[in-house]
Image (cartoon, rainbow, N blue to C red; front, side, top):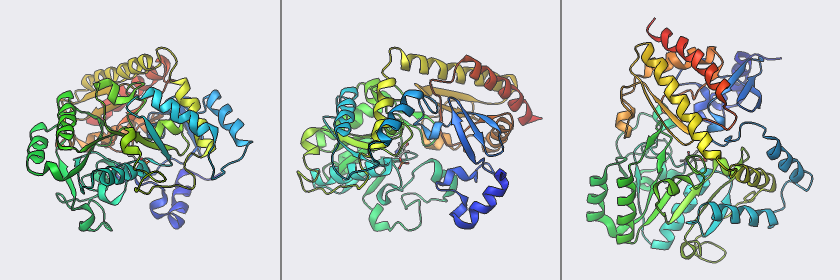
Length: 432
Ligand SMILES: *Cc1c(COP(=O)(O)O)cnc(C)c1O
């Protein structure tokens, strides 16, 4: 059996940075990432046999905990009928109907394989539909790694890039591609109003994480989202809610039901695949009618609607409809952030925390941030110490101060108590 260290060394020979997605590399917090062997419920075990309580949940999808027996059974059943056909299946109709039922703004939906594909396709559709080029995004929101969206794009990039204002946050993205991407401050109603006043008739779409989870957790104000909707309506622009992370997690109907706002298009991912690669975008029927094969906006995918992913997705979406599911999830998550805040304050650390449904944010600053620039004033050195102290005590948090955390239905009171015990020691060790 190899150790984490041996594997990481070996991985770096054949995989850039040793990982297949940058934040897994622990660059931000330092040290060697754990190589995970298996997971069950709220736990993960690495190749050395160390057990962790998992607060990442694959960055959101594992809302039921790992290996929920009914999801496993659904995938097993699908598995024996074939992996992929490149032809339509009945299960795709079922999941489309399920999504549309849970989020009524989604009259029609197209399945894809990743959140990146969903946002990229939704933007192409919005541009094709409006015949305009400009899009508005907000600082700190991440919408996947499509070229035109890699401007001021949060977490992974926040951890790695030395970005200059309005320039692409990644090498390899020509300025000509991001020229039409306007970046505004999250929750800044005045900026939004002013840009629509000057350029409103050229704006194809506003894309926003209605509960932002890629600059740590930052909730939108109701006023901000409502203004975005109103301005889009007035100017014929498309309002796109990127609910890849918050969809089905902050409430059953997503952030749009929490805020009672009907976006024109919605992007989904993470939970709708139940841990398998599935994502989607959908919304107004008249807009979706512009997609190929009906319309002129091309979009396609060999593995879109993959039968195994769809089976995991349907099972997950059905299980989260159990009565009281989200109330219980929210209540556990709230208990978690309250307990951690108490532990931090007991140790004299400046700390605040917030949660929306089953998502949470921990901030090494005295108040909950409302924008990207506020998030960046968190005490990164203290976070890094806390992260490693928790990891050493078997608690697996996101390895960056700019990521949200995730609770599953298997995080019961005993799991929270174990987390608090570790946290009291971990916070105390920061100033020691
Ligand atoms: C994760 C995420 C994406 C990208 O999804 P991938 O499946 O990683 O491509 C897009 N938008 C938001 C809000 C996300 O959290």
